[in-house]
Length: 594
Image 1: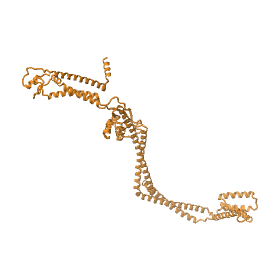
Image 2 (image 1 turned 60 degrees about the vertical axis):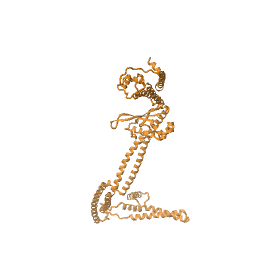
Image 3 (image 1 turned 45 degrees about the horizontal axis):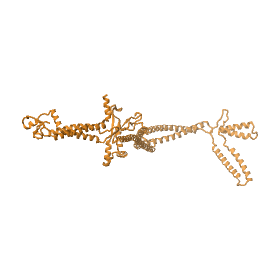
Image 4 (image 1 turned 135 degrees about the horizontal axis):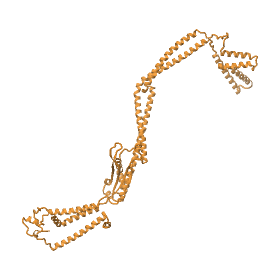
């Protein structure tokens, strides 16, 4: 330092530097304040080293999960999950990072022991949540629906910052498993809930449709054909019935006129006029010929044998006429059997008691045959009628009978037509009162049926989608990079802290020296001395240190040397621990030098 002996250590007010300082002035300043600069720099360097080595290491274990699209094209099978991937990731994050789940993991792996002792549960869970890092990876793609560029999430990373590498890996594995499992459960649950909801809605609609069908059926039964959609048909049927009634009235009038005419014609004819042949003989009908043959057979049977050709011929003709006229009435057979049974009854009465079973049966048989013979006789008597013989009479009578039958049929038809017309008219009158309720029911049924069909279609799609999720064919999370054991801490960056501390030590020491020198009013240079005395400096006498000052200077130099050596040692340790082992560094340097 340059100065005058008489001014050493003297403070002069107003001794501010008036000229611009040069580099030599700053070098002199650094040499003059070297003790303060080195002290401040060493203190800052020591503080940065302490900060670098005392901060706890934090290790990060990261897992990468890929979001794969569903294997089956969405055009064939549409998934029931309509949300985007980033939305599902955020939803799963909220479910996984719930209070109960996080606290279970904290207790399972004994995380944040010291923090749990001095802080409440909420702070521990907040710290745990901050240590979990989730980042999504987006890429630019073209939307298939809108053909516009958009951002698509293709993967995301899940990381955990732990106190040790093994613990960070375990917790990251646990969180990754929770995310993957929760995604599967969420998708399956969503698909099942969708299927259950649609199935319940389909069943409700089916019940509603069944109730509407029952109501419509009741209305139809109550209406009896007076439905709104049958109005046109009822009008057509009524018009047709009117035409049929007009035709029936016309035909009835015609038949009545014909009936009157035929009755008049029939009244002029005699029914029993005999039929005479061309030779003048009377012609017999089949019934008369049958009577004649029976009489002839009875007369010739008295003098001819049964196998006589005339008897055989008469019997054949008799059988043929009986077949033609409908056969005999069976009274002869009944009479023969009755006579035989009566003879058997008389014989039994002479031989057995009145209570004998054979006698009782014979009496019952005789009584039965007598009843049959009496009924056959009554039928024969009732059937004996006198047939007309006049052909003209018979023809007119048959025409009259046909006309009466047609007239009766037409009158019955006319009654039926009038009844039908009344029914159709009643339907048309009742239709307006039934139409509002019926149309409301039909409209409600059609809407419900359409909605039921739509719900059923969606239910089938939801069932296929649920099966897609069960078989793991839909969109899924795939673990492509499982959490690895971190080899070095994520933070703090000790080397960066040391470099920053060294820079701050140098800058802080120099700054402290400059600031102290600017605040110090002591005179150190001839220029300051001359300005303070407002005169010229004739000579400069260098400062001559004393013996004690020399000894003190030597001690400071030794201390500085030890301090420098300590800095070198600390730097070597820092290099060895934070960056590269010294033996490896030495080997690398020698290899670079060849």
